[in-house]
Length: 535
Image 1 (tube, helix red, strand yellow):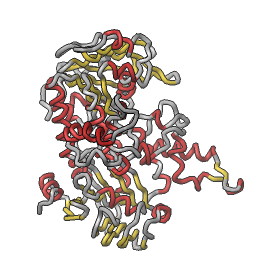
Image 2 (spheres, rainbow, N blue to C red):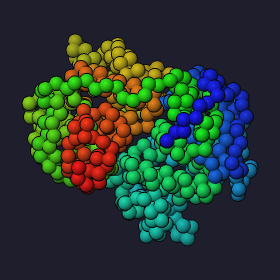
Image 3 (cartoon, one colour):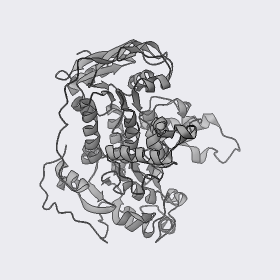
Image 4 (cartoon, rainbow, N blue to C red):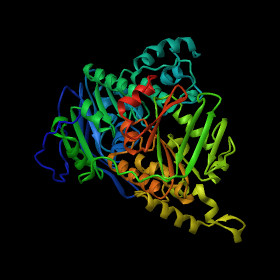
């Protein structure tokens, strides 16, 4: 928890051209006056800080504050316009370290690897058709003595690092068969396998359940004890408070604070991040209607889910809790028609054909996937297309033989962007990959609003979202429920499920073991049921 320590000043101070603060052991990452501009828009300006050996430094800020740009410059993905990033520490090659981030330098990924810096990205960069072992050891598939890859040798090398991250799957598993959370564990194992002297974590626990988050935090604490420098980017403020010794806060592309963690309570940190005080707690829930919107009976997906039955009233937010692998996502996908299923599903009293996504959409069901990068939007295409593609029929000109009316499409995209408070610095013609994670999520939600959905299924809707964007999405969900839309909410954040739901269903081992009314839905009760206990 955050210590309620008052800070001496909450002025909107910006550290312009400030020298990086040096603490701890030898500096492993030194960012000096780094700036980067995209299409005339400044993403980061004069950013400076250090991360030393045996230190965890948190990089905090809202989505769009510039954290990802800084991370990509450190990782060698982007070249800074001005400034430099230096890598050092015991055993580092000073020349190579400097070359990885020299003034205006390339900052190549290869130089970063030579400097002993690894990065765990929020969106995994794995090869789905390769095994876990092959992904972890992708940079050294051959051991130098043979021209062929030896699977048995790879398994033996990968097994210890998988054990280190607490994976419950083997090195021979195919990545495509893993869940999003399991893939994140592979990404972390891949970074740890290089035995880095510095490691950048970008939302490493966003896809994980409570037990897996605890495991990762213990790994990071051990890395710090071993003298590794850690730059930790996360929107989970409780994780920042527990793990970090220092917090570097960014806002609008600039560093606005660089302070010991002990000097910042939660309110002060949020005020630095967003430039204002945030209201505490969750919005009041509207009263659901008496009509049943969704009825699920004896749902079975022929794989993970069995015998699931529940109802959701019109205007009700129904939370679905459980550990990763409990079947929450499988229930959501089956209701939407993704994958095979048996059982009966009705929308407003009308039966829904199984395995038919088009029928689900026509019936008024919207589905916000947990994997926004691969399933939620077109990263390489204009944001306008991601917003409009769910309802192209409304922006197609019948008199032109069904051809798309681009003028109408642009109007629709602008209306949806305004509804969700989308911030796109490059405009709606820029690519989806130009958006921060929070704004990408707004697109994934906003694209469905044109159809005025009767039921919205949201799988991890605030994963990787900052506190300000979370508050906006919470308000949006409450407004949708108040207007009569029903919501099926899946979230690994226990506080979020309990704070936003009228009722909470708890999944365990593919079954819905209980449904709790709001007064009964405590964290202790939900965890007990989710782990196989009884109420």
